[in-house]
Picture 1 (cartoon, one colour):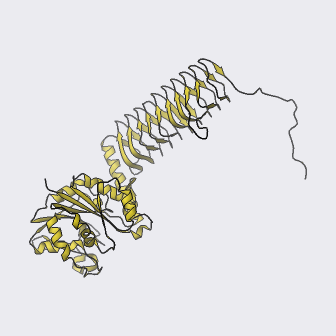
Picture 2: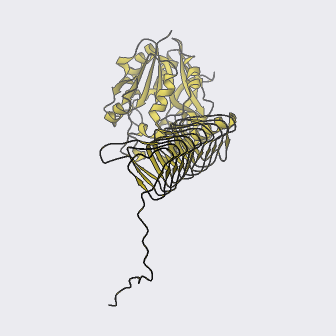
Picture 3: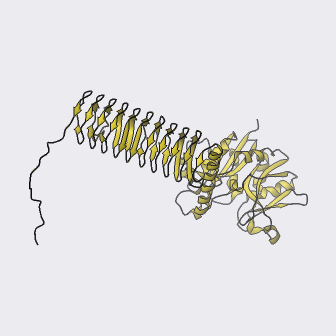
Amino acid sequence: MQELDIVILAAGKGTRMRSQTPKVLHTLAGKSMVQHVLDTASGLTPTRMHVVIGHGADQLREALADSAVSFAVQEEQKGTGHAVAQAQSQLGNGNVLVLYGDVPMIRRESLTALLNHVDEQHMGLLTVTLEDPSGYGRIVRNDEGEAVAIIEQKDASADQLAITECNTGIMAMTSAQLKRWLPQLSAENAQGEYYLTDVIAMAANEGIKVCTAQPVSAVEVEGVNNRSQMARLERAYQLQQAEALMAQGVALADPARIDIRGKLTCGHDVFIDVGCVFEGDVELGEGVQVAPYCVIKNSTIGAESIIDSHSVIDTTVAAGLNQIGPYARLRPGTRLAVKAKVGNFVETKNADVGEGSKINHLSYVGDAHLGRDVNVGAGTITCNYDGANKHRTEIGDNAFIGSNSALVAPVTVGKGATIGAGSTIAKDVAEHALAVTRSRQLEKLDWPRPVKKAK
């Protein structure tokens, strides 16, 4: 199998982003642009991947510490040719693919088609035809229609500026070709930089055919230079995700108002309303309905569950037929059995809620286990933290917790037990017992209410 080196250029500062963060570390759908490129590149099973870094080098090293890449440092920004040259000594003897860390939506299929052209007599160049080619290098072809040069806009003549076929910067060639051409690059141009694009003319002069390919969509090769372009790509990416979901049968109230920042897997007949955000790895079972403005992260929601509006669900497993929200917050470690309900303004954390159990209003349940058919009244708090350590609360099947109760952990409430409203429970409660800790009500007749003193 032919060796493949992939060189990703990521040294630029991105001045127009007006940020302390290196441009390629800005996120698209919750993941850095350069990580998008690396993930796509990994799908080509390369022998080696190299990232050329410069501005914010330490930040990039840290961000990509878990990636199987080597780094080459471009101390001065002297153009794309100069950038690739910094990785030259690390290249093997196979093929080389040059990518850009600020072009995050490139597809593996487009790159595979490009690489298929490469051998000792051919190189590959990805081009794109644009209605408005302003700012792009133009592809110059000879009378036979072969690509023979790329002219940057600042160096182009009036006739060349009329060309609409543009350079994407993405190209592939053999390592031998690249190593032969890089030392020949010159900075004698309007920018005073070493253009990698000049290798096209070198290839033509050697009789090596420049084979061009184009992406399915121009958005694949759009780069990011400012916040406006970043936002436009974000919406383009999200629309792609929305179209894929709808093709699988998911109903979206508005495909323009959904954000997927990870992987979303859906069963049949799922409905997602507007403004919802999905982060990490999320699975929605058949018939799940998600109301507006919910955030769901790294969670599995079982079939026929209903998530009402403005609920935040993180690292939770709901078995199915669950009712969640509105305005519920399920924190990591929450596990809902079948038909369990967590209602409005309820927060759970590291809690097992048994089958058919209900926490309907204004409560906090953390570090707790609830059996089957437990009813938790409004305003109930499991007091799980003593200022140093967390403690568990155990509530048995069919227990009834009255409103405005505090369960001071560690504590166990037995099966079928009842806690009277307004109680503070600090000792275990036996099965089928009633526990009440309210003070006796005191009443004074004809009591004179205090009045303000005259000034």
